[in-house]
Image (tube, rainbow, N blue to C red; front, side):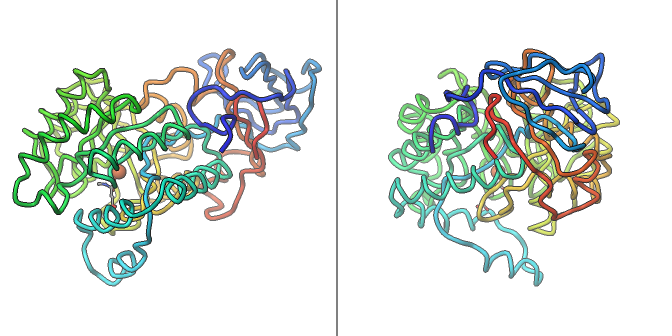
Length: 399
Ligand code: NIG
Ligand code: FE
């Protein structure tokens, strides 16, 4: 991948300095004054949003793109993915569809295959998935490690991830690897010690899978504390497999997000509502594991900030498609299309604590997409249809 294709930091490319996109059927800016309006145009200049207004008033620019009545919205911000892996677990998916339950232990299968894979293989697979995401409107993606689980393999996965995005997350605490089954305390010490030392230079975030069959609250508290001491922000996997203290722990630790939230108590919802911790909902997981879909309505009505993400990984959710997640969220999670789109743009940005993506206010990064549809409702109304016609990354047309 070229640096222009990296999804976090600004792209460097010799594109036109300014582009006007006009003839827009509906423009979603998320601007407080004019969040969305029809018959619009938008101008990108030097990688940023410089102007928007009525299509009839559009100024000229170095390049012009006719949206042909399509909807323009911010690029999606996918705040949760695991793209550095090798191998296939479609057999597990098929077994689940036939009634087998999802088990976190499947992670170890991917670990064994990923450790054997070369850097080139891992990067080619992850790059292809980033490109697949881009074609479906995603312009920012967070990428976790977690299929290495040794000092060497976690560090190389984060080094590879950092060539694709600035939003890299150290997930050494994904599961306890087989070789530490008899001494999990030693593995936790390794994660907090040598592994963190090797991974921190390539990571912005630290994550722990705090759930039944993964890591306890006490272990999570210690690992996140060590990450904080190294300047990493916290995110948690929590309440995926059952109710636990993970959600309230995430709030207590000041985590930027707690993702999954499949099994929530009233106390969890109350804790999230009074906090700056974003609830990440991942309907691809519920689709692929047959766990119940999250009642996102309950979170939204309580005032919780919700992010909608793919959790793209080979075990519990092998989709790279935010449009698919939007359709599921609308069909199964009680969200309106507007709420689901907001969760996949502004919500994802909040989850990653980024303020210049996920919206198209003047000054934002010019990360945007044109749909082959008159409004964003079509993302749920026409599920499975490739509606993303063009994608701009830092003002440069990338798709
Ligand atoms: O987010 N919950 C933990 N990790 C992944 C699943 C990984 C796997 O099954 O390989 C998730 O769902
Ligand atoms: Fe995950």
